[in-house]
Length: 212
Image 1 (cartoon, rainbow, N blue to C red):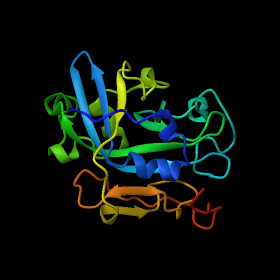
Image 2: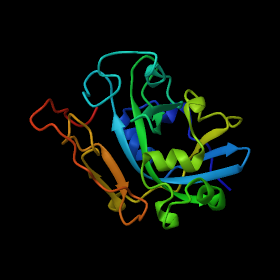
Image 3: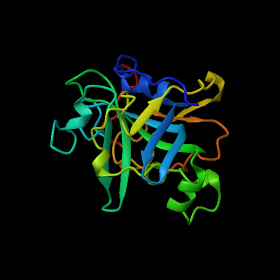
């Protein structure tokens, strides 16, 4: 049985702190196929105007408007013309910030997840990476803007067992074109579902100072 839902108030914080809060949380998605639950084991924080790697760096657009809040909503976007990525919106209404859900461990609905990711060589690979995570959960553009804090929502974010501080690892975000050294990626040490690190480019561009 899943724990309580995380609240909007809990998520209305700086994305760096929200990322730590979401690490170990359980994302639950309903569909006609059934329900899949994933324990989040890897996340990345993104801000707005002071984060050149963020979708909101240059202001609000129809694509990124969900990221401007309020907190607790799902921001889903399409990337590379192939994949969907899912984010949990944080900060307060009108101030952009979100946490990218990079990887997770499937803890319920494994058969559904396997059917959605038949090429996965092991269960640890089912949600190993942001596109795989959305795939096993059945998330797509129709889920953009869904309230994760609503118990009647088809997608919900539950509090999970807190990850012990000594088991949390911190490093730069994966594959971003700018702000490549900012240590806003957090993952659970030892989880086989954590995705491989791929350094982005370009070197020598604007960097963001971590923290609020």
